[in-house]
Amino acid sequence: MMNTVDERKKNTGRKKIDIKKVEKNSNKLVTFSKRRQGLFKKATELCVLCDVNIAMIVSSPADKLFAFGQPDTDIVLKNYIHGTTEFEDQESERISSIYEEYNREHEEALKTLELEKKKLVETEKSARVSNRGEWWNDSIDDMNSEQLQQFMMSIYEFRKKLAEKEYEHPKMISM
Picture 1: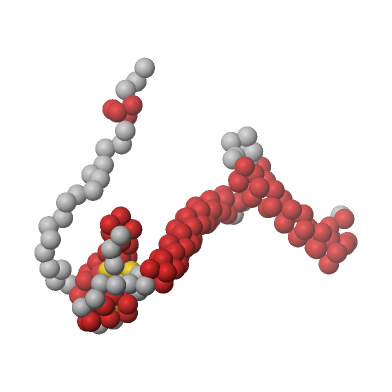
Picture 2 (picture 1 turned 45 degrees about the horizontal axis):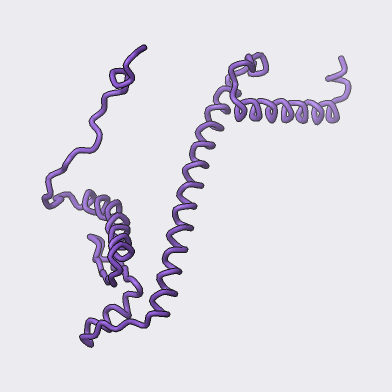
């Protein structure tokens, strides 16, 4: 029996990066856009885990403002300005449930997007195979179900085009 640890692909994985100012402006924009959602996600986790209220206003390198607030940015800021910590519990719970629903929808949309991307890659792969000529002679033994479906669709499309050509030029096809 082979050792599966030795068979695993060696890769670098995550590396610790030095925290220093990004000098190049285009790199700043990319870094900000990639890390902003992570920052807001961590703030959401902190709110849920510790039952705290947070307000964040972030200015991007392109001078655009982004705000995050739990239960709501305006409520947290008003309470901060007035020096109070009293939140309307029902309003807070309602807004919190709305955020949770939005987060669930967002996660589902991301999963759907990933599935669609995988389907697109498979379809493009199948299209490349079918466009190389004499695709109808390919063996179907090694195809998975998606490839078989694509193959069937190609056959149906091929038959449809033949029928159209026969209708347009009945004497040419029947020879």
